[in-house]
Length: 350
Ligand code: SF4
Image (tube, rainbow, N blue to C red; front, side, top):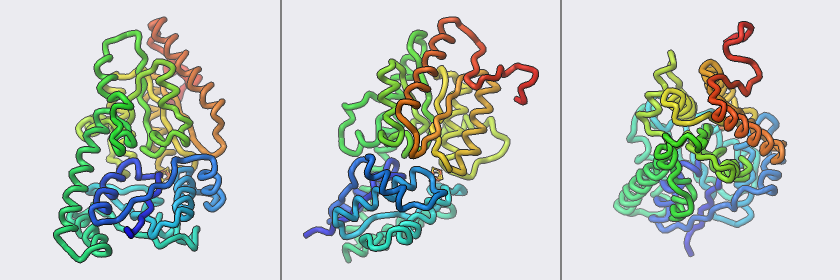
């Protein structure tokens, strides 16, 4: 019987699932995914989390409990410190395996890999070799599994950049969604099509339950979407030129770089910031974006997600935002402020 390894369908699952699943499957293990986020998962996560935790981590706790019920042999929870040189992820990722073990005693053993590419890229193959040795003594098998995992991850990134959604790529269902980025760029000259940038973390953008299916809702309203995960390194760096100081959070760099790139290039009519309640990095990053858009007079809506967010309220705000964008386009208004304060008003602090 093959060893069953549970992978929670939450947090960096939306970025790195293919890397880990390819590697582990090539070593002969069976991957078990938790079910899609639902009411029960969120409820269980909230019950076991400490108060100050952000919603995505609470959701992650719920997914781990779902896997524990599925009687897997291990639960895979990498400890992400850094995924690129000189930058960090949020501290919650660094302590995740320890937090889970502390909050959920009695779950199956946690498989923990440390990802810390801050100083040297060689750290990852070394860690993967250490992980691989748990399942095979054959170093060539581990090497091959690692190579294939890297290749799959590269092709995943390419697909995401074109505008495909992670789960469609993971399960070879790319025909289910059009390449969103390509569509937006192609229609850039069409005046009657509304285009919106969705800015946020992958686990907020792509978890339909957490974001109340915002992608579908916008598409049903006839809006074309581009998400902050669909920008290349060069585009993000070009957006970051507006900043005087470097951002040392990888996800913060992505969100602010993509939002500023959209602002420079005027590809979209406005943006929607998707923020998790109780997220420290977002409280700074999203505020910087909001202020820049306010100054430029480009519409920006902030949706803060938490476990109390009601779908009706989100729909109303989305509809109002879209209506205002349409009105702005029809009237050819250069000034528009969804913040209630005219940007060029003398009392405005911006
Ligand atoms: S970046 Fe924010 S939302 Fe993501 S895990 Fe950290 S605190 Fe939570």
